[in-house]
Image (cartoon, rainbow, N blue to C red; front, top):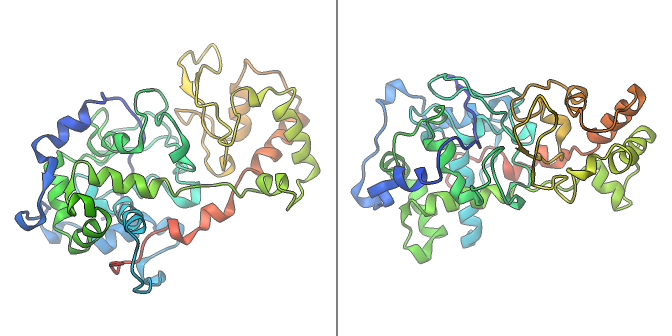
Length: 345
């Protein structure tokens, strides 16, 4: 069954949804649960599902060498647990979508589409943002300023229904599915010793967040040039001068993230105030803007009508600079990719 796509990291539902959907399923003791899944013959195996989630990156479980049996620290166990959850389609209602279905490593954990449909094929309305350095953001959606932690944000794509994304019906179903997996039980026992290995409404989001905080990107050509380890091409240097000078780009795209994390309107035709996106890896995250309506970097530049007008030559120089913000190490880091099928503990 091919992986359909869903739109992740949006908030069109209230913060209270997370506690509501987990409800009485706040805790799930592994010894007392059974999986709630469609019949096996109707669903791809977990290997197939997780493998398909990363297939466009050219990776399969067979390509990935299983880790050595060195003991994991508690923190590393939590990260590896979150990584497996991130690539596991059992976190969606019909078992067809993983977080990685929309957040693809080769696109800096965005997806290369304007918007994404969920498991019901209901059209998405927001562009999937990159997850590069997502742990450094103080707000986590395009529009809402109240989702401020990665743990808090998990419920939006998993349980959201306006529109449906991953379409998980409730927290009890998710916890039963996760608890039915022997590897997950081992990893939770290692990762959450203080919680006695519980699989519940707190530990599942904590594990996902632990992995997401490892999605750090800071080694682009521009970063290397700033450390005097590389040299920017002439056009990119001209674009850099425009970016931090007359172009006023850095008025909003500032700091390490190249985002002030504030909410702005870019032109009169788009009065909605949108959180400034990070421009790290912007060269691989097209299309652009919160609704994916700008297919190219030039289209995105032109949409900023409140910014100073630039000549065609200046626009090309600015684009050349923006392309130096791509961190190829981040796009190919095996520690962030599809995990081996073999359980690491």
